[in-house]
Length: 239
Image (cartoon, rainbow, N blue to C red; front, side):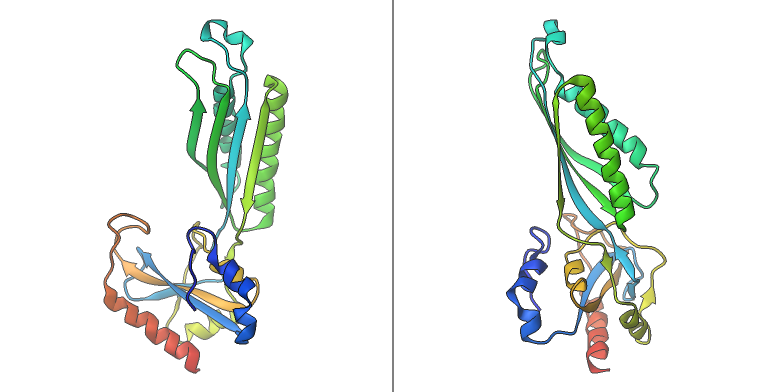
């Protein structure tokens, strides 16, 4: 199965919508991903393997003024800093989750009270309880600061994927072919999770050994390990 746009738009959804799984009566689906720092040439998996990613954007609209008359303005920048700090401090207390902001934009001048603040980040969770707890924390601080500073604070979420949860009986079968069980999941995410909401399957990790991180500019690996993955797929398909 060739699937485009895994990293951009979640291409698996378009494959599912195309009806190809029904057309060919697909009952099981498997995938293999090279993974740095795992033992070279060995294949790993577990039931709860990868997290659910939730994109989150914060937009604050205040009121600009000259810094000499800063009390006449409504500072979106400082409100944004306070908001993100308070959310991060509280969400860090929730185990096995991530709340991370990777981009921040403030529009103004050095001597002007900022009237527009935008930040972009991600939430990573493995279950709905953790997700709902983080969203509840965000909403609590959004309402508090909106009331305190009298400005507009909007939060937008993009829930497009799910936690990647493999099918247990197929995992058990793969162990007979030398697949090893991981002790804990990763906070990475995969649109393969959409397939697993529809049909049974397993997502495997192929150990690349001591290689550069995924998505790094110098990523490289020993191509001979691909034969290990090929042999696994042959066993899965013929037994």
